[in-house]
Image (cartoon, rainbow, N blue to C red; front, top):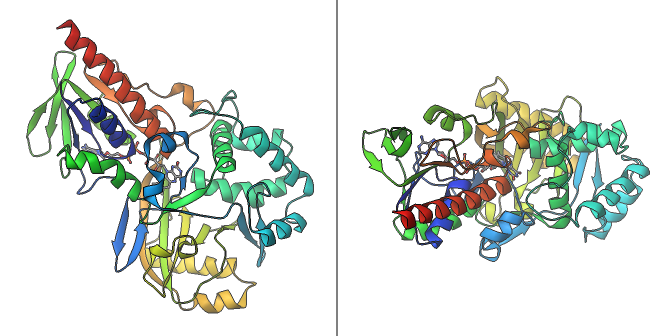
Amino acid sequence: MTVLIVGAGLAGLTCARHLHQQQIPVTVLEAEADVGGRVRSDHVEGFTLDHGFQVLFDAYPAVQRNLDLRALDLQPFEPGAIVAQHGHQRVLTDPLRDRNWGDVSEAAITTAIPVADKLRTVRLALKLRGQEGDQDAEPDTQSTLEYLRTEGYSERTIDSFFRPFFGGIFLTRDLSTSAAAFRFYFRTLASGQTTLPAAGIGAITQQLAAPLRAAGAIRCNARVAALLHDGDRVTGVRLSDGEEITADAVVLATEAPSARALANLDPPEGALETAAIYFAGLEPLYTSRKIVLNAAPDAFVNNAQLLTNVAPSYAPQGRHLLSAVVLGAPDLDDGQLVVAAMQDLRQMFAGDQRALQALLGYYPLKVYRIRYAQFPQPAGIYSRLPENRTGQPGLYIAAEWTEASSINGAMTSGERCAALVGAELRQQSAAA
Ligand SMILES: Cc1cc2nc3c(=O)[nH]c(=O)nc-3n(C[C@H](O)[C@H](O)[C@H](O)COP(=O)(O)OP(=O)(O)OC[C@H]3O[C@@H](n4cnc5c(N)ncnc54)[C@H](O)[C@@H]3O)c2cc1C
């Protein structure tokens, strides 16, 4: 019994870990020079640069089931956010979880959000955080925007808070993403912490890969060019250098466009793009561990965060690391992107002379453009996603696109695929 897993992202690695635990021999084939897929970090001159701004919600059920969170040395953000608009910054927070009493009282009196919406948010958090499971419990029939309006939120709160905050999670500010995703994220946010592993977001996939690497079960720089068939049955893969490898089962754990190129499958269409621009500075820009949201309707930077306030290990001693997130794929070269982001950062901190002075000392480190960060998830999508089992014998899927475009979705898909493949291989060997 041998299993080939094509792709060493979260889903492929989670699947491989579970099969390995079932004593089923696996080989993970990864096209890139290292594992991790979309969850990777670079370490450059003492700075930790994640491939795009990404956080780990420690309340994700699949994260709790699959990761050693203590070993990741998670560094928490403070709940809520700082909202920048019209040259002012205002604190919004979750009074049920924030232990920064200064922020809680400032958020309580701010008029940026109507009192009725603050109460709605507390009520929603209390309602959702009792729920369990890897998905939202309610019908998936509305967009997030429709849901927020149905819940009675004012357009002011939707525009100044929900668009930039959930824009940073959904990678689009139009709130067209399914309300089922919104409720799941809201529940996760309300139930735990938003964190960064001290060694970077890539520490997650490195942790999953470690026992597989030790067992010699990972091959990097191994791009799969085609699947091998015997009649209907998928029997192995051909690598781009021509090498052929056969197996009892092949698990496709690639992102949707690569899967479409390799097999006759129907993964979700479309791609959400984003860019992260890293700046280093000598002075802290602000002191809190909250994300700063740009509520301007014409925002270029959606959100910015002084990562070293949350995880000092992200920079060498005496330096500060700022990341600015741009949604979509602006038609600018890296130099122009840096200039446009810095201009917008100056707008976001326009009312704070100290911050503006500090910003003068910030210099660009690196730009990451992520061409495929997530697939779009409009209302109704979850019932249309493929299953782990394909119509082709010997071929299975472990990838976010059987569940949801998220860390939790990818890991849950990996778990489910491993259970399915393990059961079917055992059945086949019992019948033989
Ligand atoms: C910038 C950014 C922000 C995000 N923010 C969040 C967030 O806040 N919360 C959240 O939950 N999720 C977030 N996500 C989404 C989350 O990271 C993904 O849903 C998840 O990582 C997908 O994992 P995967 O294993 O399905 O795919 P991938 O990580 O894409 O792994 C696929 C792997 O297959 C490999 N591969 C492809 N083709 C081949 C081939 N032919 N041969 C061999 N290997 C191949 C690729 O190199 C890759 O390593 C974000 C993603 C990005 C990029």
